[in-house]
Every structure is written in C-alpha cells, then in structure tokens.
Length: 144
Image (tube, rainbow, N blue to C red; front, side):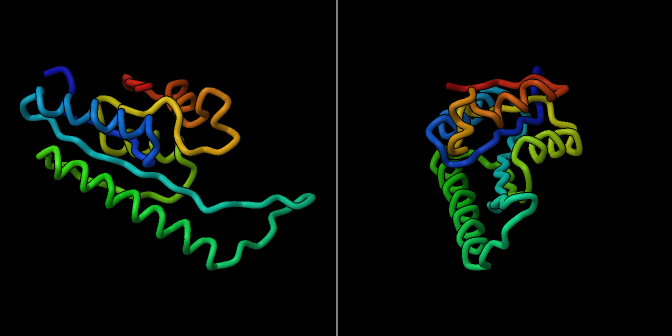
C-alpha cells in the first residue's frame, strides 16, 4: 500500500475543497487507508509600532466560530462522499500546525490546496502550501 495515513489540510477555500476531493478519491481507492482532515486557524494579530495591539474578545470569538463552521463543512463533505474520517481543528500558525500534526501522527502524505484564505499573503504562491512543501519530510500533493 502506497499511502495508509492521509492528511488533508482544509480551510474552506476553493483550492482546499479540491484538495479534500482528491484526498477522498485517494482513500476510496486505497484499501485500509485512513483519512484525517485538519483545519488550522489562528487568531488575528495587529502590530502597532513595536508590539501587538489588543484584539477584542468578540473578534477572537468570531474567528473561533468561523473555524468551527469550517470543520462542520468538512464533516458534511465527508459524509456526502460516504467516507469516514477524523476531522481535527487546531489553533496556531497553519503551516507549523500541519507539519507538527503529521510528524506526531506518523502520516504518509499531506494533501493541500495551492492557495488558501490567507489574504494578502495569498499572492505569494500561497504561503502556507509553500511553507509545507519546503519543510515537510513526507510527500505533499498540492492541488490547484
């Protein structure tokens, strides 16, 4: 078996939906393979001069609720596809979170969209996918 522990990074973007579709296809054709869908979100930080400006709790709550909604979307897509998978939500820097997760769980492959919902950083290849490709010690499938 080529891949037995598949991790799909998911942020709700168009590219991550395509990546999740590829992960679902791969797990369906690989007997005994498991799929883990990972959503890593981070709270916003605003830099002012040499420090961070405080963020209102309501803004952090909005980001957390959006992360929960994104996880539910992933679960619904998996259920519609007839695939059983573990769906995880982590808080932190997305690339670091993905890389730490696959290392801790001894995963075989990461499937990730080429561009996520990263705002202005999205114009630079897709900084999360680029960082994951550069630092992963396992194969990474980048889906456009």
